[in-house]
Image 1: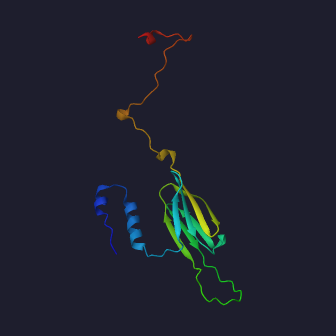
Image 2: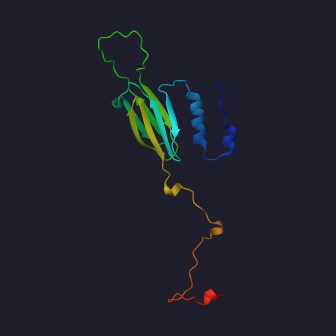
Image 3: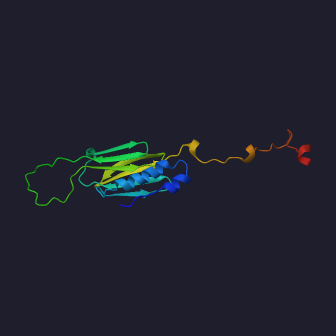
Length: 162
């Protein structure tokens, strides 16, 4: 297994420790367990959708927990319903699972839906107004509107003539 070395980047960046830690953690934990399969799609500038293939699971078998910067999806194994049939081949996975998704700051879960064996989880990034970029004036000067120098009758004053 190859080891990722972010030391050169850590020396020249400030505040990205969490990102580098996440990348290193993912490299260590990539165990190859791909159950259940999933897609992540971007819909628009700040909207995302995670789709998991969870055939055989009912809504009550699935728990979705959203914490700060972490989304955990768990499926509980359902007990086999004994209908008296002898299974010759078992190809449909009936096992529990846990999928973890690291979320960026200000990403929250909008909703979830289970239909046709696909669990869709809609996410949206909502950056607070105070955190959005804003223009900073140079030398502390601010742009102010210049008042119109007209008298009560709408005629130009001496200041306009200059």
